[in-house]
Image (tube, rainbow over all chains, first blue to last red; front, side, top):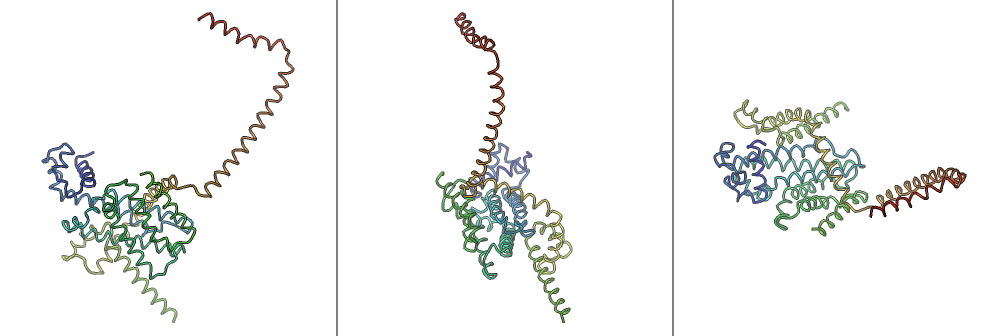
Amino acid sequence: MKTRDRILHTSLALFNEEGEEHTTTIDIANELDISPGNLYYHFHGKDEIIAELYHQYHTAIAHTLRAPVEQPLSSDAGNVEKNWYYLYVVLEEMYQYRFLYHNLDNILLRYPEIRRQFQRLVQLKRATLFAICQTLLQQSVLDAGEQQLPVLVDNMTLNLTFWLSFDRLLHGERDPALTVHQGVLQLLAMIAPYLGEEQLDFYRDCEAIYASMLAAS
Amino acid sequence: MSDEKNKVTDKASEIARNIWLAGVGAYGRAVDEAQSSLKKATPQPPKLFRDLVKAGAALEEEASEARASAISSVEERIAQVRENFHLQRPARIEDLQAMHDKLDRLTRKVDALTRLVSEQQAPKKKAAARKPAAKAAPAKKAPARKAATKAGKG
């Protein structure tokens, strides 16, 4: 691995585990066993590292979020489950860069450029969830009125955006699988009232898995 | 009359499409590149709807190229999650039924094999019965000889 990539990799791990605010470039250099001068050669300060990490995250998550906007994940009512599995994919990707969500307001205040891009990301999340819900509505999987949809989608977007922060506030550090799984369960719980009996099977499985995960932890 | 109506709906769908494209232009992946190239053309940042539509249209072209690969990778990850989920979820009645069916199929196979083996063994038994008693005798002696050599070593 190139030094530049190693710096990014280690920074991400430290930000996620120790918090972005408490991590200095000296910490990062120490962790990598390189001189601060060497680190400065690649990145002129923490701002540049954060900007690059955000760019990586934005590229990756936007790529994932765009998939349902461009083409429905489920071709008919028979493979609706794909949409729910997709929520795991999104949450897992967010979890990889959780430092951002753990300290969102603070980071967005300090980095106006990230704020600008993050606003677009929230819009994209909204567009993605809207696309999924609208497809399900067309496939008669969801039984909701057209006017209910925007409200439901905004609630889901809110939940998806702030889930990692809420989970950490409530539980502190816990098993990542639990964090991601409950995040999906919370989103599904919002859709569940509009789902038919057949699709509720998946929701019940999801609940059962969560219960067994809690029992095991 | 209907031609006029069609014109109106065409116009409406075009407007809807432009709004959609403007939406894509507002958040897309390549919007930064698109914006920087637009910035070069116009000194002000593209705040106008027209510019966003332009950015969206450029993005749509690029997106359609990347679409196939993008979707396949998301599909692959969905497949992974699905596998993991199925391992974790509790057994359903359908799953149990499937297991029963499998068990039934296996039982039938075992029965058929047992029958085949017993059929194959039956002629052998007959053949063995016909063999003279003298041939069976040395075979019986063999273990006794082995025991003797073992005792000798000890």
